[in-house]
Length: 371
Image (tube, one colour):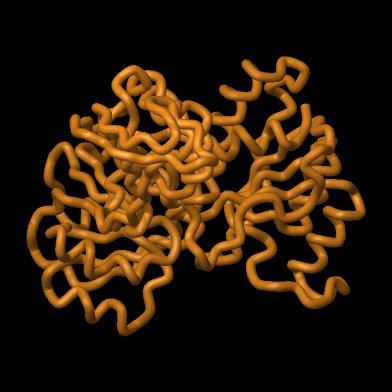
């Protein structure tokens, strides 16, 4: 099975367009045309994990964190990043990272976090902004159904739990073609008034080229009139963090002990207890101090995240409990999700790559230890 086919499956799980601008996701080493005979899934693609891939005859590593994050000016093996990259390249092992592309997915890192705690009524904590565009175009009534369906097939018209969404209105269009024109209705130099349908659909902005291709391929006019607008609306199904509820309220200390057990963490650092029940829970896997205001604004009783600094805890301001459960721990079940997703998709797509060749790494790459 070619790596390019597996990348398409990974993009279905974690579209690269969902990633944050600062991130470095996607194919980090390797050639998309190489044949893949085994996949190792891990949290961090360290040198020891590269060795594990070699031992298991896996020439693709799918990792959560990108081993190459900032630019490499030299690759001399002087640090852990360069050592891992050199060993991967020497052994013709491709490395693919998902990171914030999966963080921002509605079924990604934070949904996995919520599911581990049994939270219900979950929704995105910080919806992604500047991600939705709107297409407006005009066509004759005879072309409406074909054109509209082609836009839906290209990914337009999806709003929350609904798809094939559009707004259609009728009006009169006018035009007058010059000597080089070839009008669908009327003749050159003839002023034409024709009934037209105005079609309006929204779409995720990374789909723009696909949407325009569908528009031009299925429109009957020689010159297609259209407009694309950037919308200020937040995307409710894409974004960082999640907020949900416990089935039953819990005492603060009991809740944090529950989290400690479920997320298998060595310790939890937290702000002062507020002597009230925990019901509404915000989560953000990985570094999440930037989510404190959002969690407070949505009246969360607690924010579970990682990498909180000393002064971050002051932001609790007796409104919320801030709890740092550990970076690795807050993302620990992500690699299990990736393995399950790949097994389900690839087995149906490529029986030649058996389930036994999609392997969960046995190496604990958490650099933080607890006494």
